[in-house]
Length: 191
Image (cartoon, rainbow, N blue to C red; front, side, top):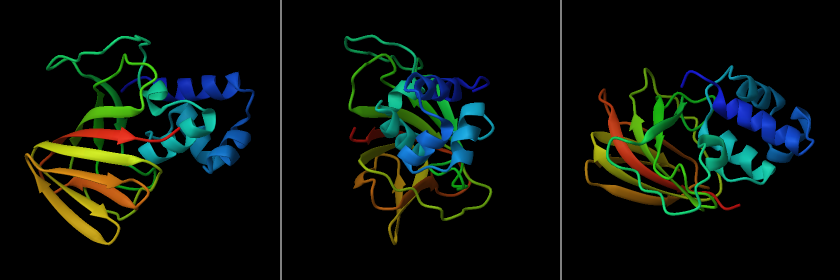
């Protein structure tokens, strides 16, 4: 993603609520430097801080990740999923690999789930900085293999395997081995 759409939306929402960077950081439990760097585009956005920030702003995660405001059903045809974000990992400081997110419900407003097609690229080295946030996640492996570090367990999933888990338990999703994997992920974060 060449432009900083997420940072611009984050700034716009924060300013619309009359909040300073410091106030948003305090409300969300995120440090000021992270908010500033996300707004400026200095760091790649990561899922856990974005969830905290959107909750503090009173919007759903998709508000930052998509553009359209269609109120009817949304159909995404094969090959038409638009890349909405490229995240370094699920945590800002982690290196679980680069995740390319493609939204599958980009035009659906007032949704409670966030469905994504994600390419999970292998990490150069694995750091075990796990993500933890309210909600639930469902993953279906479409190709390749992924490894999920979930609490004290490591679970390897291959093509056709699925997992459904509570996101509050510390976790990290990464490619298993040296090849990228492709997954369908549905994230639910309560408002």
